[in-house]
Image (cartoon, rainbow, N blue to C red; front, side, top):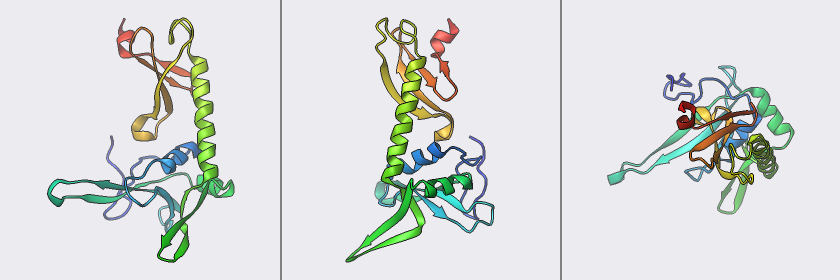
Length: 190
C-alpha cells in the first residue's frame, strides 16, 4: 500500500484516488460499523476541493484497558454525492436522545432505497459473473456453481470480483464488469 495523503494535520485519506463508482460508495456506507456511529457521508469545508467525505468509525479492543477508536476518511467524486441525494439513496442521520430525535443534515447514511439499489446491483453482477463460467471448466459438468463470496481488490476500492470453487480444486475470481476470469495460481502454472 502506498503512503497515504494527508487530510488534516492529524488524519489521512484512506484512498489515494477518489472513488468514482456510486456502488463502491454504497458498499462502504452499507458495511457494518464497529461502533454505534454508522458509516456516513459528512459535509466538509471543501478547502481541498471535496465538499463531502466518507467517514468510517473504527474501534479496537485492547488488553488491560488499551482500547482505541477513531475514524477513517475516504474521498470520492463530488458528483456521486449529488446523485446519492437526488435519487434518495442516502438520508440524514437521526440522532435519538431522551425524548427527542434530531436529523443531522450534514451526516448522511444509506437509506432503505440505497440498500435495495445495492442489493439489486450485487445480484445483477453475480448473475453476470455466473454467466461467464463454463460447465466442465469452471463448474462441474452439470453446471453446478459453488459460490464462495465476493470482494474488491485493493482494500475494498478495486474492481468487484466473485469467488467460485472449481471442481478441480482451487477458486477462480470472476470480474463481471470487466468480463474477466482469473484462474487459481496452481492452474496458471500448469
